[in-house]
Amino acid sequence: MFQTYDAPETSGGNRDGLQRLRGLMADTGVDAFLVPRADEHQGEYVPTCAERLAWLTGFTGSAGMAAVTKADGALFVDGRYVVQAPRQVDTDLFEVLLIPGAKLEDWLGDKLKAGALVGFDPKLHTQAMVEDLGKQLTAKGIKLKALSRNLLDAAWGKARPAPPQNPIVPHPLKYAGKSAEAKIADLQASLKKDEADAVVLTLPDSIAWLFNIRGSDVAHNPVPLAFAIVPTTGKPELFVDAAKVGPETRAHLAPIARTSPPAELGKRLAVLKKQGKRIRLDPATAGAWFFRKLSGGKAKIVRGADPCLLPKARKNSAEIKGSRAAHKRDGAAVTRYLAWLDREAAGGKLDEIAASRKLEDLRAETQALKEISFDTISGSGPNGAIVHYRVTTATNRKLKAGELFLLDSGAQYIDGTTDITRTIAIGKPTREMQERFTLVLKGHIALATARFPKGTRGIDLEPFARRALWEAGLDYDHGTGHGVGSYLSVHEGPQSISKRGMVALEPGMICSNEPGYYKEGAYGIRIENLILVTEPEKPAGGDREVMAFETLTLVPIDRRLVMPSLLTPAERDWLNAYHARVAEVIGPELSPADRAWLTAATAPV
Image (cartoon, rainbow, N blue to C red):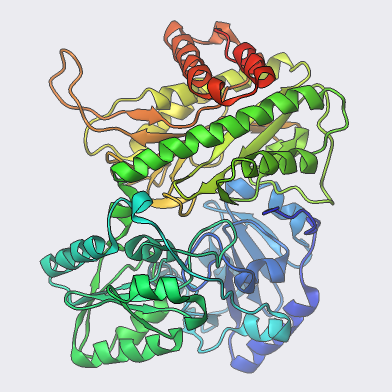
């Protein structure tokens, strides 16, 4: 099994660790210390050795920041964790504050006097974050201080897990669709055009994509933890532990890159600094440590986005073909699961862990499953209202009649990454459940059927998914869609369909479409499919070309929760056409019994 369920999810916090941290703060002369969720690569998902925030506070969410002073502590989280964080954290140790309403700089300003020093590890905070926070704190008479060692790591001590050393493997050209040589050549051409001498890459998924390699250093993400320097001319240099590079991978990398130990990275940056090179760095994704290493000498830092982000997000024809194949395979597994769930849930003995395990088993039966793409969110009743709920033996509950069951899951296949959420009625749903499910469905359909011109951003489209909920005085506190990689991270930038989605959508990008509604203490609703941005075309009678979305996910939506009277004729047509497509494509992959279930589940509304 790729997922475990034994981690406690109760109010916690490391009181002893916090005391040791405060002692180290006093020894170092800082009045506060920042503990982010991020690691040195600024990834959303981190290895166990980088679970600093969870070790200190007990909070296991994928985003957050803790601030510790001599007497106080605070944990800052977003709306996804408004229910989860207070349950996991000892609020006597850490005040849980919700961003963007609560601001880190305001809290520090309230707790500290003018002249105070706030310590931080420059490897764990992006340059953009450090500059912004530094500006805000300076106005309050408080200074940020970059530390040469991480105080929390020192407090954690020998109990801290060792860094991962999992093997790196080549990613076949059949699935990559473009050779690493060609990708590197394109990148070098873009650097030359921008008059940069080199770029420093810090994101593992960018490095995995560029060099056509994959790894398993981070749970559920097929990436190796590494850094790279790509010069405008000559071979790139990949900074990676030699223990991860076996003979096959060494042969794959030899023609395209030099490999060096990670300890050499600082020395190489010093050489570039001395030579006065123009080095491209992304302030939004690179740690402040890199900027500090290259500043103050002859080198010129050229600020710009990681140049792998956009080409990685624009899936090529091989990646699109692979994604369609992965979604067909995954759709059959999830449909088999839903048929099984309908048969088993009525007995009242099924719980969240058993339900989650069964889905992983069915995906494994495809013989193609490499990993799950994130810990399955298996939330029954009130647990479904916790947006990023993770079931454990401590929180496990039965699937009960009259409640909703929210299942958000995904798989990593060598040809594609999937992510799907279905909300399932256990027994007879209430009218309120049906009404609110249908409002979420209306938003899902509105986004799925959107047509939009070149230059349209995710922020421009997101209101499509929220309008029906807004009209009823309802909403949800998470983004509507994130980018998805090709056998890479299930959360991929730079595109998103959210209030922060400032990047224009382009053909080949894959996003999620996942509006929801959550009633705390009662139930959660989310409907998620992955969608592919199509090539622009001019509609009949139109003047301009527009793009659209192709829905990739092929799994039925629970008709028992749909209130047809709330749907327009066009919305009913979309749902019926979607279900007809699911039945046509997935039906032949199923047993006779499951095919009969699918026929009923996809009957026209």
